[in-house]
Image (cartoon, rainbow, N blue to C red; front, side):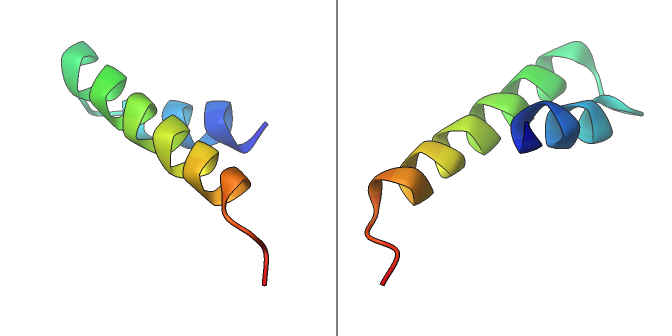
Length: 39
């Protein structure tokens, strides 16, 4: 799960609220990448 790894990395040294925001951004980015055609 790249999402949890990325989120955990960004959590280090960040405030909880920022960590959540980063995690949400990563999840949205991954979802968009998954929905887009791979071509």
